[in-house]
Image (tube, rainbow, N blue to C red; front, side):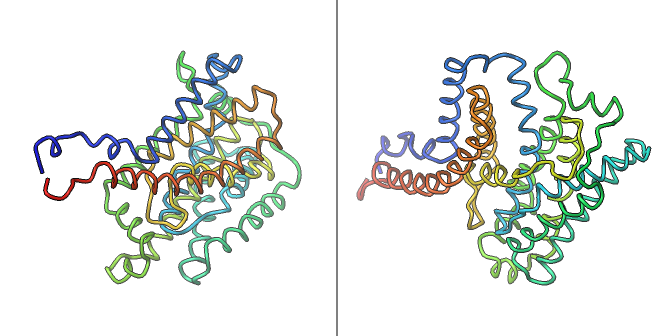
Length: 336
């Protein structure tokens, strides 16, 4: 190999991946929104757009880990609703926030543990288990509260739901995500638990034979999902000043769409949080732009469904295209 070939910057190899493609697409959509959509760039709208994605941003963190490990949790929206109801009932009963918050997180952990035990101890598919608990958990919420809602909360809690951090447009409701996202990223990319998750997703049997505690790891992921959903339930309740059993209907579709759009392989073992963060931003912008253009919720649901399908097709096609370009133009020739 000559010096020129050795030191030639492999431009395609460095930028030719789904994460960078998604970043470029997101920037293009932002530019279109700033210059083509009235009121998009206003401080108030940006703050509202960020607040509106807060719960999905939280829930997608454990969902990414579960999908990489070849599992899924379809009950995230129902867990959010149930824990929202539990939190509302606790505050209605006069339980102070410093006690109601950890109790609600424990309720979320119990929901996640229930899912995890059915999957790891009984060997049931997580798709089927969480499809069942999606109805079960929301049903428990209706049993506890019926079709009523709770709207009376402490002022400090409601302030968290509507105020921004200082004079910035950053709402307090996104702060839990900003705290947890680096922790999840470090755990997934830099810590042994992340290597175990990738190993389980790559080949569960090989992971088991290599000594990885597969059941323990998967159970921990489901419990983590339940706890984070409970946190999202309180964020949702604070943001809308409302606790009821039908909160967050359909949010699981949005979360799965964001994860898959971010490059997480539906077959497990592949993906990073970097792409998911770009997908989250792109999702928030699209939702906000559709709202500003007065496109209703049903039409928005159609767009999200199409996004889910396109993300599955495009991410697989893009990887093949990028790999082909690198192999054709940037592999060293024989004798160089």
